[in-house]
Image 1 (tube, rainbow, N blue to C red):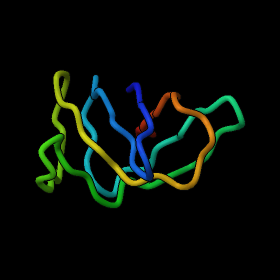
Image 2: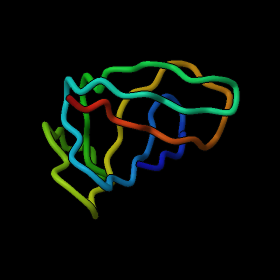
Image 3: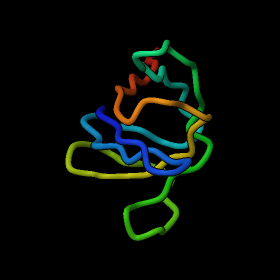
Image 4: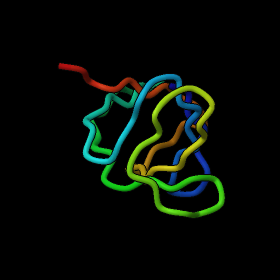
Length: 77
């Protein structure tokens, strides 16, 4: 998944399934951070529980970061 920061949320281009309560690794130039996707909304601001595969663009809240771009990897297993 690729992300782009805007304000306090990340815009994510989803390549695999992502749902709320998933643990993920935020990979940034300043260092990696573990996060939980506690809530998610589509690009129109409507709440979503799951982005089930490629083609979805969603927003999730982020901790304070200084990079404009990064990667998000979902933990599996």
